[in-house]
Length: 318
Image (cartoon, rainbow, N blue to C red):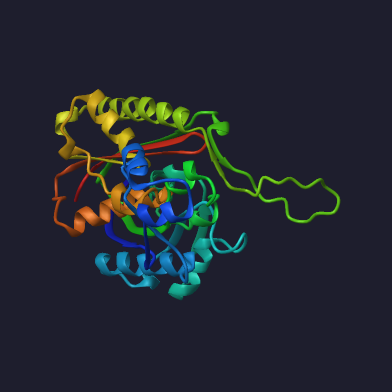
């Protein structure tokens, strides 16, 4: 027993921040950011909470799925952390939707959406659950150091939701991690425990950019080829490769290594930057809204992120 996606939704904060605006704050410029990342713009939360974004995206997905909130049996939130350490973002979403159901968060960093698909598939196969809401959401603007131009320019806030149910659309899911935690991380904040020494780390995102780039290009190509081999497909059979929108150079490098056309690798990082676990479902919802995905289309989804985690799925759209 597998699953299919029956409704999607996405929400971005109201405040858009261009590269030129960042150049007023830190030592950078539009040309420097664009050539290295492909990013021109990102959205940053100012008045919105993450629960606000997650709730709105969820209601959009429910509307497209033609379901009421009461028909949801479980909420899974791939996130780096909600508005509270506890309760979970999933519980906050459940309260906003007015439902009582199984609800929990997962943290697989930017691979979180594909991890969520596999978790949902396993719960659906038990027969106890019919409709599961996956809400990928992050306010990563509160985790980056806004004095560090090497990281703060890369990210944006956002949320995207999908309703999944039993079906046969997903042909393959594989999630794994490689022990490279030092390449990309944000430490937990120390608090003010008087019995421990305090550090000045601040809990900001730290990244070894070149090493992350090399991991991503190598791992994404490898996982795509493994997935296609497993489902006995060729790259030419795939309509779209929806890759995590971390850096346009990564996506272009994978495209070149696989000798495929740019049309198969949609990109929206220029408008939204890296919204972590939300990038793939935001892109999926956008393409569906634009009518670019049709029944029978083959999609390959690949997320990669801190850990280093990587998640891959092959979907024949229904």
